[in-house]
Image (cartoon, rainbow, N blue to C red; front, side, top):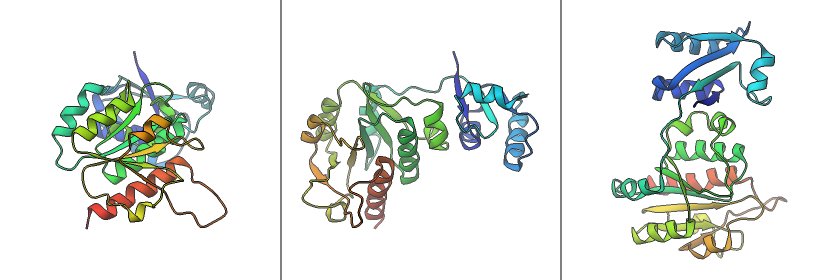
Amino acid sequence: MSEIVFGIHAVQALLDNDPLRFQEVFILKGRDDRRLQQLVKALEAQGIVVQVATRQWLDSKVDGAAHQGIIAHVKPGRQYQENDLPDLIASLEQPFLLILDGITDPHNLGACLRSADAAGVHAVIMPKDRSAQLNATAKKVASGAAENVPLIRVTNLARTMRMLQEAQIWIVGTAGEADHDLYQSKMTGPMALVMGAEGEGMRRLTREHCDELISIPMSGSVSSLNVSVATGVCLFEAVRQRRK
């Protein structure tokens, strides 16, 4: 069994973190790209065989996505389980978590993972059902973050949120109707930020299990932001506060 990873950043991140997972690598025949050639040299230095392929063949492997001239077949990485979460939390002095409720677009999942990694989030939590899969597209958009941030899928999100609260983790949900915004919220302690699906927001039961609801102040003509953009805005306000 193998997975596909494509894109220069995603392949480079896997090479940096776990080179033993590579099975075979294919690059676009005749492509003269400095970044790609540097990556090929690094792969070959690890003893990984790199083969050439046509654009048509590469395109067929990723359904026409932007593969940047490189595709790798790799062994599956570590799959975090729901029962890994208590030990992870116990090992952290100030847990900083991201919960994604109802994110079904792999592009948005990848972008959220990228922001989470940049912000220093310790883990991302998602329900197993009605959520995007961490497929090759999500990994490519994540630009390597998928190899660094644990993604934990849970069977019952409300039950997981109760467990987090029992561990003294403050749960902050985002909602347009919140009575105060993120700049009025204290985000310095152990916390989990909850982001809901674009358009629909958090599900009712998820909302009811939040300790606090916040909004992003909007000044222009648009009424909302893309969920991955909103995630970055909220995470980095938390980062700003936590660094003081």
